[in-house]
Image (cartoon, rainbow, N blue to C red; front, side, top):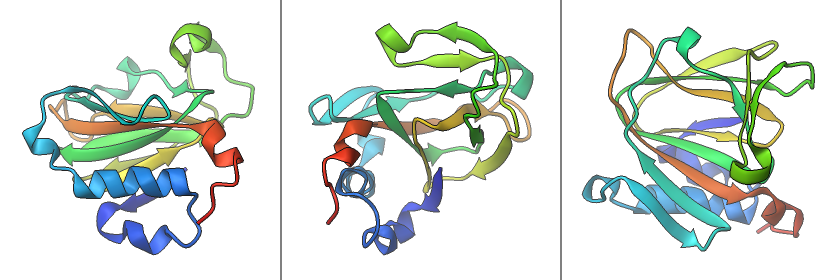
Length: 162
């Protein structure tokens, strides 16, 4: 996982793969306040945006998840959100497996889970080996507005260094 604030994203570009640079540049340059919720292509289905407005929930009401095809770039626009994260040790009990049709697998819990609180402008990049639990409440349920950018993980294996 990589955590940061969009104000400092360009400081990472010397070592960040080009597809992730593309994602962060898009986050920094787009006026998402003017857009309705929905999906928006950046580079077809290789890099795209999901603009969502969930309500944060209690930890017990959320499930840790992983993806195998896409890297998630969570970017908070409005509100406050706690995100859990952990290395996928292979020891977590599966709750629901939708990897084949939705690139999504839920675990019952995540071994060695840690948490980070996000405020507007913060981003968290979650790789396929990163279990993550988004949209957890900090002080109580809260409507948030956020972006989840999907970056096809295989793009990073194609020599995508600047």
